[in-house]
Amino acid sequence: MKFLQRAFIMLICAISIGCNGPEDVGPTDRSSFIKFFGNSLSNVGKTMVKADNGFILLGTSTSPDSTEQIDLIKTDQFGNLIWERTFPSAEASFIASLADGYLIIGDSIKQIDDSETISMVYVIKTNLEGDMIAHTTIGDPSDNELDFHGRSISINENGEIVIIGEKENLEDLDETIVIGLDPNLNTLWQQVYSQNNRSLEVGKSLFFQNSTRLIWVTTSLAFTNDDNTLSDSYISLPVVGVNTEQINNNDYGRNEPTLFAAKDVHVDESGIAVVGSSNENGSNDVFFIKASTSGFFNENTALTISTTLKGIALSGADEALTITKTSDGGYVILGSINTTPEIGNGEKDIYLLKINNAGTPLWDNVLGGSGSEIGSSIMQTNDGGFIIYGTQILQGASMQFLIKTNSRGKLIEE
Image 1 (cartoon, rainbow, N blue to C red):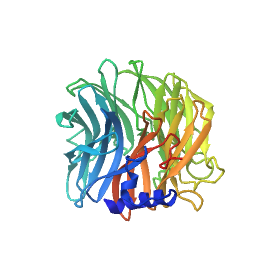
Image 2: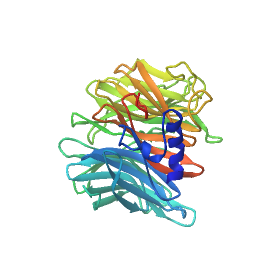
Image 3: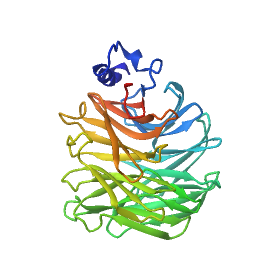
Image 4: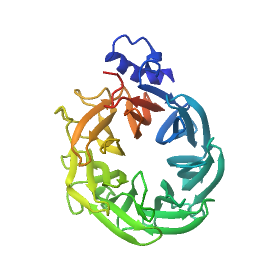
């Protein structure tokens, strides 16, 4: 574990005075910290939620024999481990908080033979200590060819549970599946949304709006018939009533040569914010766009980031991964950029971009060491700083990390 920490520690030492060792990255003398988790060959951080005086981290780890398991970790407010739980033969995607526990969604993975597996949507309900108290799988166990994937979960103020994911059809294209569950995880209803000759890739989050509407974001993808390469993609923003047909499904980028990909969505009283990537400048860049509360995109808010606020060009292999609302009414975008000689510290680095409610950039920052650092989840803390959860990859091994920054996304106090 200390071997994997070294890349980040060297970065801190390079820009601070008097850094003597790993203990300096702890919370004792500054509000920032870096913590690492994992003990197998491959550990991937997926998402997190707040807990009493700390955080709940959800990830996936893979053993040397390629067996996957879900990792559930509780830390205190300084990222110190309190407990950890594992759920075998499964891959994690998202977690939601309950008053008395947590709901986890991902994939249940069944080995068919030496080279093939089948996956189904997997929902786990735990108590506040992370112990499983109920679970269910959703899919087609009689068909070893069609995979189902769980992507996100949401609970409204009335306790209604809705999960969203993807299912393969007979043309090997992904359809969106939305399912309502009761508190005991029994299926109440199910809807499938599809497009002719297109695959639908579901974004990270699912939101209830006024407890009656569901909002998520998808990327609509088309592929060539001859070599199955991506030929076209645009962003769709479905707004649907619970267990009803679509109310609205506005899109952005349809019939344009630019390829757009949506990674996440945030819904609040000011509207709907979508982040992802755009290749309108020739290769992938960080992308943001705002929509009204009813789900209609405002093209004037579209923002493509190909240079930092310092005017230095990014590598062009970049994307926004998730977004969170900040206490001042704006947003922070968590992205991933490829390092350049002027920006970053090696391979992939974490990119933070602060924007106001209209999407105007305010500040940005890059975090990373000599390996690859890929953030997956971010939230603002009570002191105005940010907690970032994700994955560090160094020399073929990967660990989950938890980073606490100051209010401008920096590890070192200024």
